Image (cartoon, one colour):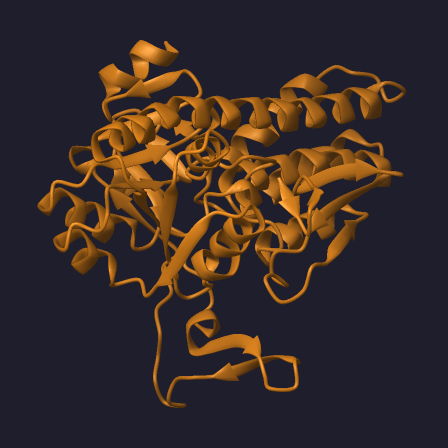
Length: 356
């Protein structure tokens, strides 16, 4: 997709370094950062310079390429793989990508291993692009159906950033929106601010602006009243881990949107590539929920009157804060799952009909 009229991907390999768009700098600064070591790749994931389940997976894959460039030794590669998996625990794509890379590299001699690793990392990225484009085309049918009935702008609410900045291109939740826009269907997006890191305001709104799609940033708790007023035609969100029973783990606050949508008969869809499905965990209580630094809540970053980016404290000095990064939305609140293979009900039967 485009930034400043120029086509970009979120990650690419060039001259033996991995290049990323540093998302901690957006929307006020556009910075391309170089990752030269596996440690730098791990830090980029931890610090959320890259974020979004598919992009985290791709970064981990390229992190193993960097590990081989750094030290072409099996023990170092194995340790690097373990460290990458630990960098963020909730998004299943991370482990999926590392496991896929390690299986591919098993038994490959040291002379060929770099080429094999680089080819596989690139394939993971290309596959994600194709998956996300297919998700968009499948989700487009839902938006078209609403538009054909309404004959007016389709208002879509989304939470956090499941846009192209969270993937390699197209995005998951935004892909149907981009395809609708390209087809000439008028769409408007309600972008949840998504505290505490404001991915909806800083990233979703930013990328939609760059593509010329109308959007409005709203406080996280505004969605409910908009649904009550009939100002939301559908919700589309992404997911960091989807269980085989259809339960979805996504950015904290997703669950509350699903409850509001259910109460107001607003369709609630989740867009995901198959790499986000966890076929092993059966109980959502077993999903590792990441708890991040309380400083993400107590401090906020913005631009002052002089155009300088500053971080300020907004909480009382004696106050404590809890910063859980994800929650789980039970399948019963989900209208459907939009995948690269089609749309299915949020259930084991629905997923197995598509993928097994």
